[in-house]
Image (cartoon, rainbow, N blue to C red; front, side, top):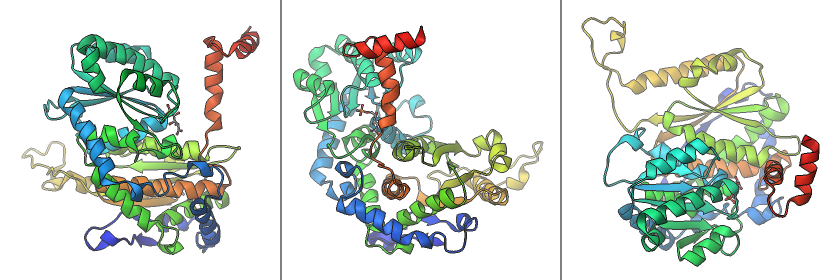
Length: 461
Ligand code: PA5
């Protein structure tokens, strides 16, 4: 079934669309339609707040609740940072990192860090690892530069981010003085709790609140994502407008067959439960979408991978990975399906030139757009992978701009909420993430972890 999404803006602008025909052919007739009542019930439980994890449903109608006044506040703070900083370091991890990076990389110049554009600060990401070389090289790079920091952590205590923020705060204060540093450090954190809140209040930093009822991986449309995205110079109003459009197109009262999120949730669960497809590979043919897939991986991985269940979310950048993972996808174990995020029209035009000597034999491409070649690679790959037994879901995106990225974000979020409920898990918690932290704190002799430290040392002795 090919579905063109209905929305108020349809008359003016085409929406993203979903094609599941090449996945349905791997399922029994009407297998997706058979999910209708279960999907409706799952979405109703989100709407009524009766689903597991119902204290984390603040994302569900977030787009339509965002006001212009709020976006103007974000923009004002972003403008201040943009005017005072050559570099802005965004410190955060997981849901406090991936959404901003996904959007900034999707919309930005592929060589942004090399482009010397005085109107745009360089945006860097940190606080998402504990690599000593990474942090050393970051602090070296920042030496002598007018940099600012956005410190993002809902709990305000995440080790990777807190450790990085301490380094950056000290360096910023040393280079700019405490008074000036105060104007270029912004916190995005809980309203009351956590070390990041305590520090922001004590130092007098501008701060934004992450709503209690929005979990990290669903928070890209809060200041967690919007502030860095605005700092990078992208149109957060358009992004939110796109998400609002999709909130309408995927609403609970939209008929099942016309609701793209319902269809996507249904087909992936049918592939998982009925066809034994345990791995979903999100694929792009535009390198700018690499981090969008990273964001998607976290959204689905942390939401669904629990209680011994869940589709494993993987991602490939094509055609790059056709020369590495392509072999496995074509002929490896038939436990996978692909979801292709297909950009219909690139933003720029590059025509392939004529060459008199034609030593490379490529004159048959003369005058064509590079995208014409990419599109044939995409179609050729789809046909080959379907022939090889890989169900294919296609999400078509008219253009790679803020509006459509906003649509994609909400589409994948609502589909994830529905899908997790279909699977029978709480999609909004992540109890498994605590296991490594407990061991790390015990190994580092963190105060309060004395018993765990003793136990782990005995285990390792
Ligand atoms: O999705 C989530 O909840 C997590 O990935 C968190 O975003 C991540 O662990 C970072 O947490 P915090 O924002 O508390 O630093």
